[in-house]
Image (cartoon, rainbow, N blue to C red):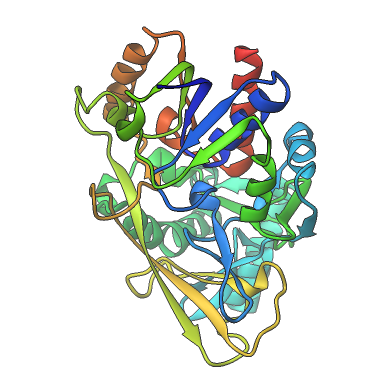
Length: 371
């Protein structure tokens, strides 16, 4: 029987950060197992035959205000500075997302757009994000009209497709958080650090786990090896309900059917990401050569079709946040806390949506707790 200090299930961001810290900082042995054929989890990317770096599980743009996270990852990669700009097709026109002052002038007649802009600045100031719930409560018919427009055109259609719910089942508090950005800043994120690893995410991942104390086994299910490995500490970034054999029931997720298409022309669309709240069955189209500014005669675009997660058919992408699912997760969490040598982490272990920086921050905090 193989002996190892730490067994880590999952070779995504959570697992690799904890593996590196345990191997380097504590000088402990680590075995990482992952059922997939590659490292990196959902941030895995690769260069295709055209020299374009493809994000196999959809687009990933790193952004953070957390300097500790930025400095940690910077030890393993140089950065291609990249400020994300996303557009949505509303009434047949491409407009900035989040909806901002420039968006106003693209979708409304000049006099109405100017009137709305002046009212927004006068009431809320400049360079601020105003939730549409606040606009609805403003007791100003023009601003209430704008809130309804943004709700219907930007939020409603996209959300119904993304989450597979009926409009009447949408919680008003969720839609109320959708902002109008009283600014001409057309960036999707406003974080201090925004970039993509200059050699791609996979190369960064490989550097993080390139350590003599770390062994990686791919194409390996935890269930296959758990009785063959003797370990002192288990870090599990797989689905927490799966670990406990679904004894309380299955936690639901949304998934994606990503359809990649190659086009025999330099560019397909005007930018890296175009959202389609009103048109088509897909939510967005993503053109990958924009991310690392790669040149090729052809281009590759993915189209995202949201769907329910079904075991054996697709991948878990998004936990579904509601009170019933949180209650179910808490049952598993209570079960997990009975064993102090098992740690659950990541989107699947914590049943929580994390951005990449939040994933790394969570792993670093957990390491401090272990240490």
